[in-house]
Image (cartoon, rainbow, N blue to C red; front, side):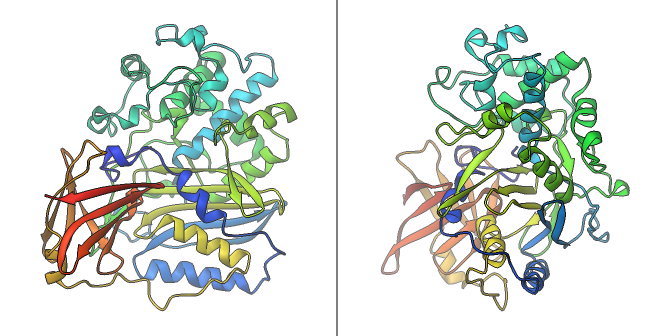
Length: 457
């Protein structure tokens, strides 16, 4: 799910899995990590937190055993309450793995089929008589992703009834013909959540409890509501260059089966292990979840891991980001929840994997942000256009910092990586300014594997 942090709609169409394809492929599996290397991992997490880069909870889990567990940072708006092992986080789109699992449990019981048509539940949706459950599960239904709509930003923090959501979904345009291609859409999984409710005649929250949480002993996994630190639930934060600012909260009635679960990294790891060891669904259903078509599974993705691969999902909602990976060769589970991020998510996960597999990790002396002289950043100000995108970007300087603003969007602060390369971490966006001598020609915007050339008017 996307919050106000993800401001440029055209650039932020749920790239959470794509951005990791290339980075994971440069690593390879090796023998088990030595115990003392976890001291390095702990020091790395402490250093990131101390330098206002990342605050997170990390668990490494294997065969029912916690290999590593650590939390950093704060969870309340006043930033006085520290995270602990039982702190719960919004896990965003990892919710989809749980929703898919519960749908497959119904398939195992014969109450649904992979070819069951959406029309049996929602005939009012266009082409619903052509959309089987597998197309919803695998993001090939063609139903538009509602979080990409401009309207989404006007209601995501307010409670929405199912009727409200369905009225909105019915009006969504179709993006492509059924099964013509695969394109990530939260709408698919909101609908799957409603199907669960229709079959069980219960709210999603109760279904999650009876089908997943209670049988697995997951006491810290449930359908979210308002974050209450009295319950040890974390708030999320964005860094404004000087301090962490608490994020607005998505009302969980909006993401539903696509992104409303709250959990801990340990609970997530236990769930993933039970799923992958076939104690939750049948072999046939697990194989269906793991069947990859054009990069998409059914609630899971497969990511290249040098000569091998990992299965899992990523999640993002408000200022939270989460990661849940299963490494088949090692039976290792990597489970991460982040509630404050001012660092590249790619580099963060890559560094953790380098430490885990002894692959050349080097601790930086400081994770601080380089200071670029105002005279340099002032040269970047102006109006930029792109021939391939329907959006212009204005670059300006405010109080010695560089800001960008897309057409019709709020402005956002650019963090320097060096004199010409800047980033907006929450959206995974980089801007590389292009110069000829001292003259600025334009910039190249990079996000999620896409490159877009902007020229200075």
